[in-house]
Image (cartoon, rainbow, N blue to C red; front, side, top):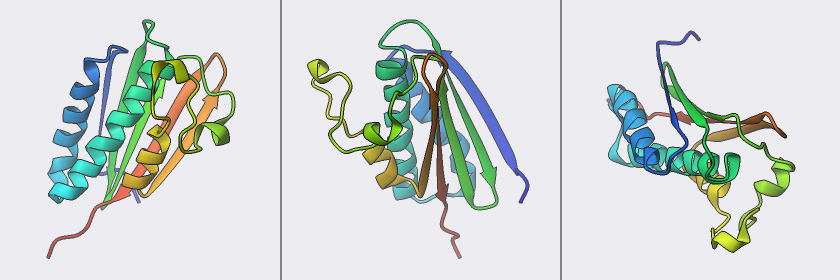
Length: 143
């Protein structure tokens, strides 16, 4: 199954850019005639992934985040990539309520939210190199 369309955006790791990422992905995915619910799910997952990259990947320091989207028939693939600190223990980070920064009063639900709203989520990370979060969602076919 080949890629029917793809896009990539890159932006500084500033919290103000989280909204930009949501809108950019939503505009790209809208070509599939997604439902309002599917679009909301995708936007929520993108927000969580980008926020994680800003807060945990770069710890609010300067860096860049790349968001890639691919459409393969009725599957949307979204990658959120940072070149930040990386995740020491991915399985631990995926646990609900786990946060590496409890002093920031974060909920520790980022990966749980992504898993709830997307069909699959894969995380690749290396300390000192960065993290890639790949999320996939099958879009319903309207008749």
